[in-house]
Structure formats: C-alpha cells, structure tokens
Image 1 (cartoon, one colour):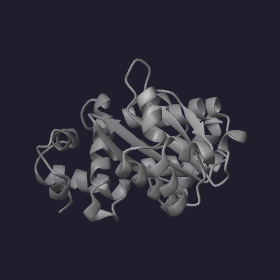
Image 2 (cartoon, one colour):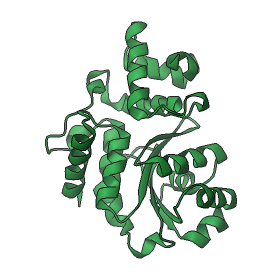
Image 3 (tube, rainbow, N blue to C red):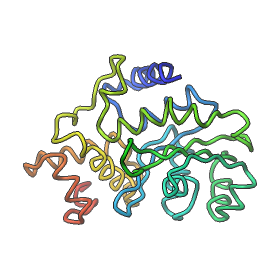
Image 4 (cartoon, one colour):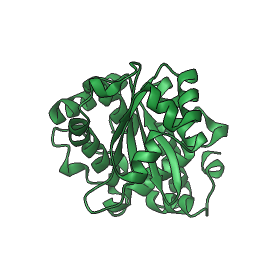
Length: 241
C-alpha cells in the first residue's frame, strides 16, 4: 500500500499542476488509496492545535470544527499516542458537540484518527480519515493505514522526506532552509496562518507562500519566521497582511 500511496501522491500533484508536496496533496492521496471519503492533517505543538491540510471542502470543515471546539478524535488520538476509529454512535457519545456539528455540517458519519510522530519523539499531530458510512472500522485496516500512509506523512512533516519517498517525488522548495528537524515548526506556523479566522480562503500552499514571502522581505529564514510566530513575536495577521 505504501507504493500505491506514493503513486497517488504523484497523481494528485500532476492533476493539481503542483510541483511540490503539501499537506493537502498528502491528504487527497489518502482518499485515493483508503476506503474513506475525506482526509485531513492537523498538528499539535506547544499547546497549539491547528488544521494543516485537507482533501476537500467537507474535510476542511471537519478539521476546523475540531480546532474551534477543542474536542474530537484527532485531539484524543494525539494526546494518547494511539490510533482510533469511531462509528456514528461513539462519535456523538464521546464528543457530543463535535459529533453533532460534524453531522450537521458534513456528510461524514464515522472517523479514524492516526497520531503522527517519529520514533523516539513526541506525537506532533494526527491524520484524520472521514467516511460517510456509519462504521469505518468495517472497511479500514487501521494498522495498515498507520504504517503505509501515516508513517510517510509523519516523516514528511518532520523533515525526513528522503527516508520515505524514493519514487521521484520532488522535495518542497523550503527543504534547504536550516536543519531538517525544524520542519514541523514550519508546518505549525503554516497551520496558524490557516486557522486565522479573518482569512478563511488561505490553504496550505498559499499560507506557505506568504510565510516564505514575509521571510524574504524581512531578511529572515523560513525557520526564523516560523519560530517568531510560534513564540508570539509575530502574529498571523501581520504575516498575512
């Protein structure tokens, strides 16, 4: 399945006309290889929980709803460092407000969440998989999804892309900025821009472009700009203005 996933990533890039990887590309590729109807990627770092990328509009709504409400499978999976899948009844039973809002705002009725992290390091996010069927566990092999899809996404976000993608996928243009271990901070900063309510039209590609543009205009590296956002020395509205 991992080979199929890498192929799907390349197909999504080609269809979008996008030369570099982004979390939304990775999320859309999940839908191509897994029995799900939507996928989203979020990050949790330094007490921040931010949506990062999604496969489509409904998945974007689901991601932002979890962030707004502060509850849902993504947050629980990341906190417990354990993958989980919940059916329609459990969704409303465990997270009443989120379950009702997800049902009201999207066609999704069951959710799986896979924590994202690298060996020996804390979990820094989650891959969320959404299905319109009421019981995703009946068709989704959670362990296989975790190893074949979750692990490559975690590696990408944490900056060890070359250890996972060996099929000619071009690395992002920010790859040369600073030590690779800082990549998760860059994507957390991107997520902070996405989560800014005044700019709902911002996606991962445009947010990264604006972050990169701000860094260039102010003679900073991408890592330095991300660090200033995370440490509240910059605010998202300043970067996006």
